[in-house]
Length: 245
Image (cartoon, rainbow, N blue to C red; front, top):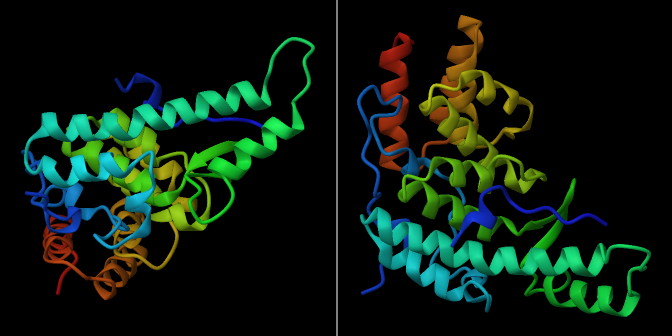
């Protein structure tokens, strides 16, 4: 059994709900979306989400709520997620990879799994290549890193996660890559973006080479509009790519 650190975690050194907080990062010159890319992250845990009360990360959620427009406070919130996650994953490495000729202690392994992976209060799950943070935690980390203007950390928390319920994070990673001018890397994520979301279809439209496929994806994105920021991003894409009426 492998243990995988989310890239960037090891480098981590009155409350407003995250969904309602203003985004810290304004669109830059030449922005693809005309809004902060952070505003387009889907699946952010709502105020009543039980994941917000998970003991290792409750304080981090509170810090993210309170960070507001301040990138330094957002970075502190990211660190508040990253530090306990790094500790938990480092413990997994010791449990499941004891080193030398030592074998895995099954009792110790079961205790670890019961504490961190199994059950309602699990903070990890098994991914394709090892342990991963559950999607709610990974999404909050990604938002904190984005608002802190820490692109590498945001990509590390979102890009490589497995499973269908992490498709919104991979779509957001593709958006970040596009916003950074790294279209070839974004294109590598196309098979794993999922189908039923605004951002997955927006990204597909952005990367499509066939005009009809581009327009079809753009229209599908329009069918999934939920927020004013998504509408702004859709209009920006329509104007920039000349997608007509």
